[in-house]
Figure 1 (cartoon, rainbow, N blue to C red):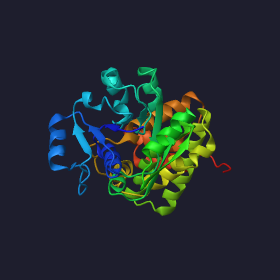
Figure 2: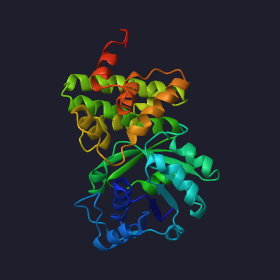
Figure 3: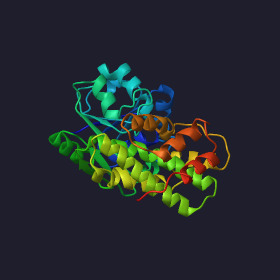
Figure 4: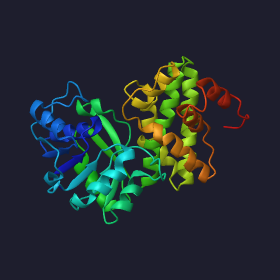
Length: 320
């Protein structure tokens, strides 16, 4: 395989383009805004990644016709836009493997990213890329490791070889459901941990939320057919550790703002839609997710932060 096209010129999509282009590969980065993509091509910068220079081998485009020669497509549009993007543009894409890079559960029908893609593009060969990686650090060449999930072993190994570079190491799993749920659900727990930070409830409370939140993530994943050990890897525990402890995480930053009494900041925060979707999915499968429920209720303005804390602390005592 050679020739990579990345669809979605946000911070993460651009970071993936940069880290591959730095290795001397020809990479095409597609964005929907022609003016923005022309500006990126001319200035060799993306405002979402300040201080990062786009390498010469990275082509910034706004026409999907330019990705026809690609042998691998990395879809990095926001999770809630995946279905709309594929329905609008799927017919124009080349017959290449599609790697889903967004982390989220669809708010409308509770499907994972690969499930959405499979419904729109039934003949497509699919994989998912997830795990602990901040866009800024990946783009600057700092060492990172992610999870590549693919049900087809041969395709998975091929993509693993293609998409791994010196400073970005990919670990392969065939547990596509577990890998995607880990990446989606940790955003919800990160919002909760941010609320703790913003309200100054202490490190002990954050550690408790992370630990019990991880238990919730694992329960739902197993109920949906995933393996518990998948959640203990990069795509679950690893991503949870990163996202719940850094202001670079938009989900953690949102929670911090809400915990401090500020208004919700703008921009895409994947955990917002996923919180309620996760709760509805859990209810369908008889899984308890009290932390996710508390986050969803605060985001919906059904509960105050104080009410959410009281609800969690008043739950019946139980064995761990």
